[in-house]
Amino acid sequence: MRWNDWKVSFATDDGNIATAVRNVPGWPVITNLRADPYERASSESGMYIRWYGDNIWLFVPVQQKLKSFLTSLPDFPFQQGSSLNAAGINDNSIQAMQALKQLRDLETLSSPGD
Image 1 (cartoon, rainbow, N blue to C red):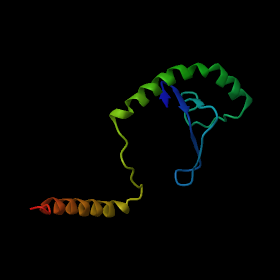
Image 2 (image 1 turned 135 degrees about the horizontal axis):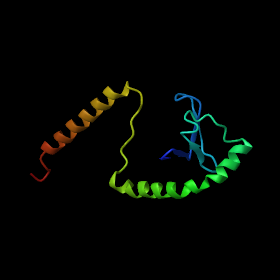
Image 3 (image 1 turned 180 degrees about the vertical axis):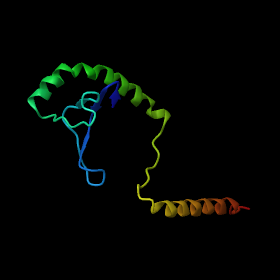
Image 4 (image 1 turned 45 degrees about the vertical axis):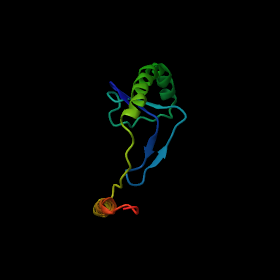
């Protein structure tokens, strides 16, 4: 989550987009994007722990932003995910068209009592 010059990460990815491993730290990672725009500072150094303690106040506005986001979720229900693979686009489109055709065919059938 980003707030002004700050970024608070509740999960991090180690590696590139194709092979990254997702890590969920015990405490969120704080980054000042103006001071560390490429996010290369180590969060394991002793200096970071001191700096983290000095900037833990940041959790107050971040919690307010999170609450606002989470309370908006019912207004925007989750949608079925899709693959990042473009090869599936045509197949998914064909399956959706076939399902719609089957629904239309079922609608035109008369009920057994007719």
